[in-house]
Length: 111
Image (cartoon, rainbow, N blue to C red):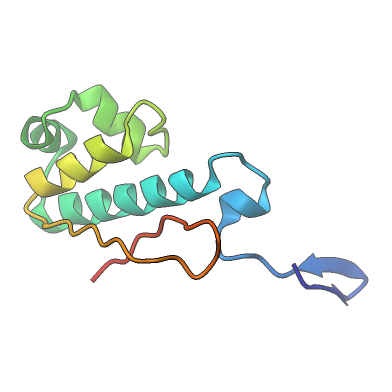
């Protein structure tokens, strides 16, 4: 991480993953889940769905949708979030390719 001083304050350039910058163990998974939830929120808005309507369509309870909208999605797996998106009318493509480093990583690309 690159560091510089701005107006007497030490500023660190982020990695592009706030969860990694915070030192969280599952940073890549959290970034993926956050990206999926952002897309679910956009879909709900674009489709004009209430939380109850979205819950029924996604096959989860309204309280889980409410938790998700408040940023608490720890009770939902990446797989379940992808299932929610497909139920809202989105295709999901998983692409596997050789990593450039010794250990690969997860990423979410939105079209």
